[in-house]
Image (cartoon, rainbow, N blue to C red; front, side, top):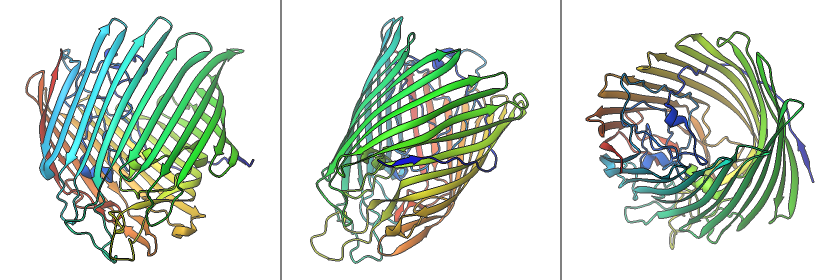
Length: 575
């Protein structure tokens, strides 16, 4: 066995904030039965979100409904984000009068590109101590991107059903869910030997399913357990199953808090159809881990001292390894609320999966390599606080060392002209791996004025050093060197509310196997959300998405939808 003992490093500086702390009612904050279904989204995605940067601020719009906390949702995110800028939450509005909240809601939206949004969330109180929750989401588009020759339609449908129970000694809940995604490989290589046409069938789909359970215990050493079983299949005969269990223990030794996390993670998958770049037909990994830690407190400081030990068995390669990572978090109050330095030293063994890759970038080849990533070091140093009662900041720098980091790289397509499959036009992505060192520095400022106006500015810079990636010339493919976002929310009056998100993604290198690196342009994307409360039950909304970005590409050869306008309504009710 190889023992990889991790490194320690410090980092850099820039600016971030957290004055806009979310303000919720007691009912919203009460946790029950292992989680909650999140029924409100500040930004509703479209087909382009499968490969478009997405930002999800907590807008205080009038469409929000009282959510009765029941159980968590396995497939609660309808369309996966390719990149989410880090930001603090925005404050919720304080109504002058206590608002009437409803347990259930339905949402319907229609937009150009024939975009359709449908949502339904319901919470049923079966008795005093148990609840049943249902959450349904549908997002689809008939496409129509100017640069796309082949069909670029898309749909994403998910359903979760949850049951939660609380007793004197414990809370527990179970959730079952399924998600069905359809899309098209419309991003072909314009200089390839074969080009897509309007009649080329490039459709594919993914089906994911899950069953999970979670329990929290109030007394004793055994604090809780989280168990999940998930599976994924593709229309190109790819399949995967995964089982994960995470018990948590906690106790006191000499008035010191001691915690012990345990993890068992089993992942197995296979591919019956290969793309043009071969991948392993099968993969099977078993990870077992321990995470002991102690918590130390003082009047001005808080320290967590721990470590993570992981054992990994690769059945297909008949190999096993042991990994040890630091797990340290410390903060010290120099000036109350004004200046609080902090440091984190972490790491971990990340079990990459087909389900994860398909959620990040749906345009995958029929077979991809699935290999765990070892974060040898994930360190951050910074300070945070308040400049005034309404103005907060955070400044941080970090350094990350990863072995077997995954990168999305594209091919050039087949060199023959007959008998082509839908994925042989240079229109799919492959996973390739290398070691990556990342230096990052960031900043956030946040301003909250009388809870009616909130503004948050975030910026992060990255520097990459890639090694052992000979297959793609050590290119940090599709990783941006700078990102920034500006998020705001303004309550005009009791009827009107406006939210806005503006984000910037810098240039990225993207590697095409057989050709080399290409540069993807930077872009600025603006989204606006206007809500009008017609009555306590009915709210109308109008959304403009990608108002400034144009048909930019986040992934190579895949332009997104241009300006999008969607209108609709939310109806809140009780049974």
